[in-house]
Amino acid sequence: MDVVKNVGADGRTRESVARMLLEQGPVTAGQVADSLGLSSAAVRRHLDALLADGQATYRSAPRRGPRGRGRPAKVFLLTAAGRAQFEHTYDDLAVAALRFLSERDGEQAIRSFAERRVTDLVGQHRAAVVAATDPVARAQRLAAALTAEGYAASTEHVGSGAQLCQHHCPVSHVAAEFPQLCEAETAAFADLLGVHVQRLATIARGDAVCTTHVPRAPSAAVTTVPTFLPTPSVSPKTPPLNRMEASE
Image (cartoon, rainbow, N blue to C red; front, side, top):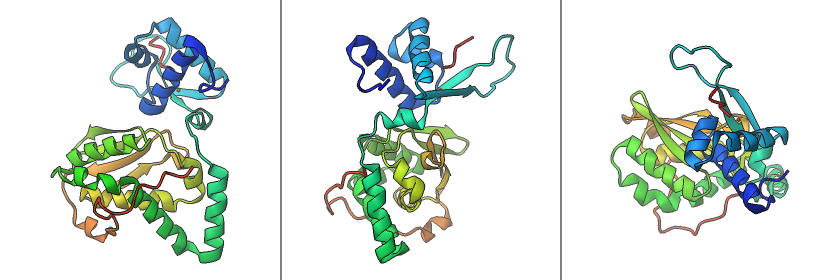
């Protein structure tokens, strides 16, 4: 089953369920039902279909206080195969091109390419992001910018800072072989936000979400981060390379 090729109302509903897992996962079946205005039975049916097709998986929900009797609660998210249904990329070509570049010009050429790509990706949003003086507020604006670029990003307040979460990565398969893409992205985030950020997880490494910790207070460490993002007037944008809590 291909969620994107499914036709009819049922297919569109399943795609909506899959997209919520993509953009918000891991999420419970109840959260899916509430967000999409569906019945619990309908959500279970679509989640079961996604699970059967290998496009979704689930895990036990983290405990939040004492839990009563019954089966452990579950949260659902898309697998790599499920995320691929939303990717219109040319991964094989991109990987081959970067391999050739690496063999011909070496490691620095890959790093230069990665920096240029992330510059084109978020550089045009620089003015809007840096207009906010607080790093967490900047992270919220960066999340909106990344969402506009296809990364389904959001922020979540944690402790004295925030976590910037990217629920989708159009180039995750390429970044799995060329981590320089993730490294350049992390450096660009630090530059934009004005703090030393820490990448906690990446889809390219098999995690469900790319997660970056953003502290609220600026750190002296940020001065070591290269500043390669231009002002918004620079080069045109280059396109990026191409689990149900049954509330038991």
